[in-house]
Length: 383
Ligand code: PMP
Ligand code: GLN
Image (cartoon, rainbow, N blue to C red; front, side, top):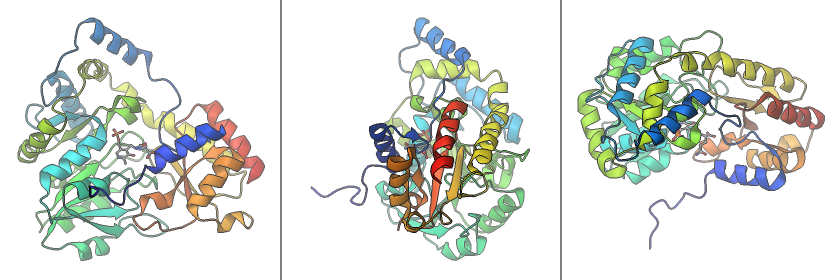
């Protein structure tokens, strides 16, 4: 039979994690913490199980969790979403992205994706029968180029996916860039899919520019965030989408027949845990310390560090390493780094449709200090 996704193989994250475990490399490839989450959250799950919260929750998610999400967004960013009709709990951000694309596009519609892009966007668009139109972020800085985005807009453009803080580059959009985005979209009917899964990982005192800070953007956006990232529980696959009622009604039609509901005990636990804002408010300081420790260690190598304004990813340019290493393409370099140096990384080319090579690798610093130091020891010795 013909393939639904003919050009798709196994994701680079799975491939590199497998290679890391085969070779005993320190895995700084796939993005996930190697430390435990808060015991308070774990206890809340145990309590939810013991209390018998083990049957289907409401389709859109547990009301208490939707209320907690709405309260957080309102407090941090100023937009008041109605938890009844404007917030839905999803099985990870991945499902929210797919559901938004399926719900809001028709076959033949165009969806603009800024490249480098998280790897699930393109297959989601393809599964919807829509067409992805790739617009490069500015080479070198990875900042949005509004002239190029404007030039890509056609009467068929239905949606634009924006990811800030940005995986893999670590850039964080500024208030000015959000205003430029609002101006660009103003005369169009384009819907914004705002992937903000790293919203609480923005460093150096900078404020995350959620679409929920910009009422004009919020009015045309599906805002997506993930508890997996915020609470160090990527394996739970619980996230949420927030959007104005008309958009959310369409989103839920698809959600209803895509997953219908998301696991109940975790929703109870998250609702209780969210009552305390400190875990997400303290997250930026927690990861900024790790970023700084990691960057300071990497300064002892010949790697050039790209800026890291947000996310838990640090990208490095290896073009100043001695030949023949500097000449390897990103895939070969990341394999070499994993098998020969003992540190797994992700090639930035994995985030491009046509595998553009810039001699850049992405390293994840969501790791215990001991893990980071072990990786740094190997990197400093070999590079
Ligand atoms: N978007 C981006 C930019 C991500 O980095 C990730 C996690 N790798 C996701 C979406 C998916 O999040 P989840 O694990 O909640 O599906
Ligand atoms: N989002 C994580 C990353 O970018 C991994 C997610 C996955 O394995 N699909 O590394």
